[in-house]
Amino acid sequence: MTSYKSNINEPHPVDIQVGQRIKAARKIQKLTQTDLADGVGVSYQQIQKYENGDNRVSVSMMYMIAKFLNISMAYFYENLDPGGNLAEFTFNDKEISLIRDIRNLDPEKQQTVRSMVRSIKSPDVL
Image 1 (cartoon, rainbow, N blue to C red):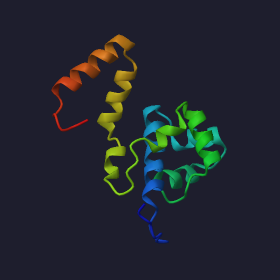
Image 2: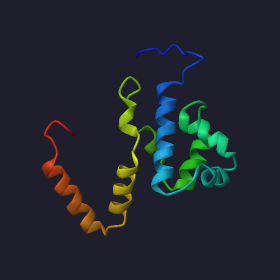
Image 3: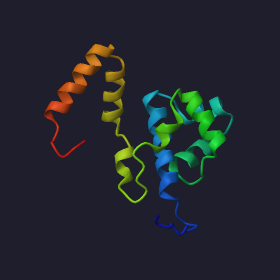
Image 4: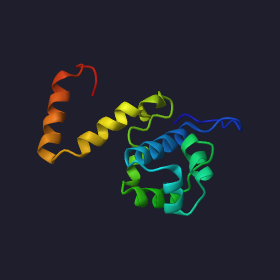
């Protein structure tokens, strides 16, 4: 296991990923930082610090956020690669809109879209 020497000026890569995943889930549900903050009982500034990775999210707060956003706790750690490129965990506005559109489809149509995407993507992409 590789050790990580913390630098007081830089957040840990895992904290950055957890924050990015919180932000993505919040945006997909069209919630503001204030909406999420009110839902879990903290300030919007605190949510901003979590999303930026500036403050670590405690397990109990992560549980409250997951419950409020109706997502699993595992979502925060899916595909965790602290040494890798965390950009894959952020979504731009077009991607968020596409996710919303797909979520609004019935399950059969969602599967059709998934099959179509899998058939046209590059062979080296999972």
